[in-house]
Length: 124
Image (cartoon, rainbow, N blue to C red):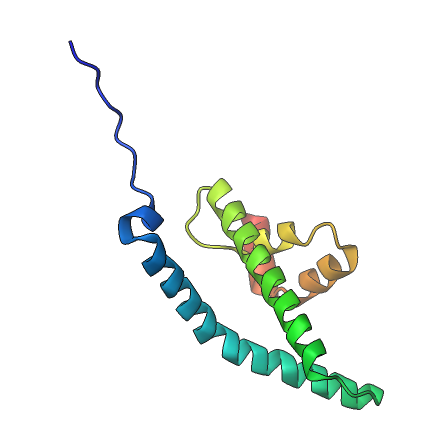
């Protein structure tokens, strides 16, 4: 009898080609990055105006990159928590679980949860 090979799902990068994958990834980042950068820039300009400081473009660019990477890392964590719970959708519990190490943020997030969601979680 011959050896049977196990079927492995193809790697999406190899299936479409690495260059195509990188182009699509860069295009998606540009599409999301521009409005995101505008929002971060406006936030820092507003905060700077309140504090009486001027925020330069290089600082805004560096902070935008930092916030973008943190958001990407948080999104990956939330997806992993949902997948671990065998769900396809991220829930409020996943968000609370992801911020559990930051007590101040955790309290703030708990205060933001609508009563309807909080009571529904307790019943289940």
